[in-house]
Length: 249
Image (cartoon, rainbow, N blue to C red):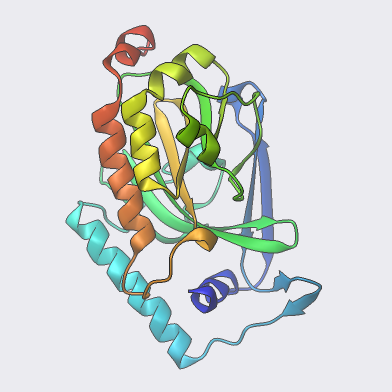
């Protein structure tokens, strides 16, 4: 997968770096989104990758596997300009393997972020939780590069297992504590590699692909894990949040 990751990070001709501050978080969160399109800076040098027929076959195998998985969930390859708005004003064509539901409540894709001098590969999924308006919260695995940089102060929950593995940043501690009840914490522990940000009614869940277990290109394990998280998150959304943090009519 390291080779396949390098191929995906070197697939075109330029680096693009987009930074912005999410208005919904009142300037607290800076999302640095970098799309790597040809030259990858590795360690102290620059490696230019020449794609071979074998590598093209690996990429095609991954694309077909992801398309088949998405089709089972009713996602299609026609994504909208707002499907990934939670990560900034990104052209959807900058993402690889992007799919979305026809109503655009769910969207999934691979994308590359330039962190320092090395690209970081992520698989991301965004989805809507209808009827809620949750202040910004970010939950991330400790020791891994995340999409969100900066933001509110971190705080710990009353769970040693969870606090040892995840960091929590939230604009509003009350809503964050309500959201991260025992059931939601267990979902994150079970999904293991999934991180998420939420603001308003939109969730950004993502997997840092550097931490994923070894697998074949025909096994889109990141997408499977993200869909599992989606199902569990919606089912476990505490009812009290739908009343105390409901969308104003």
